[in-house]
Length: 268
Ligand SMILES: [Mg+2]
Image (tube, rainbow, N blue to C red; front, side):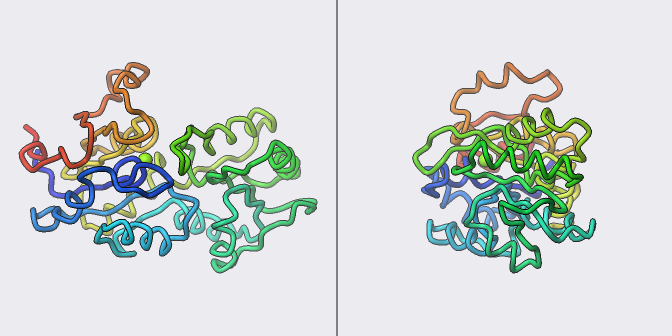
């Protein structure tokens, strides 16, 4: 198989964590891909930055990236909410995304609201148990549960492991049996498919590179892409792969993205 297109995770691949410090070698690697003949898109589950702010953070770190090279869970989630006619949302994610959600036309339910159309989960370092209690009440009243992604953990700006929306979603689903639960970002197909369409690419000629074998790479593999697991993010030890089945293993394991040089991209 000849790899022509790359889909690239951001946190843990290009930057170390929420500090947005570049992974060593990452800036030169990404900025040289086009000259090597590879077309690429960023596919991100980021839910703490509005899309343009995310791009600006990467540009500040030295990456040559533009907004049209990003496909993200936040945008995919908004598209789903609109398609369902959900306007009033119980936002349990980071307050840094709240103004952008309002710009997208959504009304954020205040904490005292009796109901909302959908509870929406994103990464939130300040989430309290009382927030989950309120969400459980909204779900009991019939709200849908939208997970912008279901990452189990994430790394904050100090590199600390924090529980992610996947963990909170599991708690809410256990608390409210039968809740309608939908995921917007990786590993669900929509965000990958938007990126492939944007590139005009087939999964068979596309490689996904990420620090998350459970979410990002599992979803990419189900669509038929080759996968590369890097150890520069949330899982620094490849031993984590022993918890995955033989059909879920990545095609390649590397310390960092800049080790993915052209001769390793031509597989078989
Ligand atoms: Mg990542």
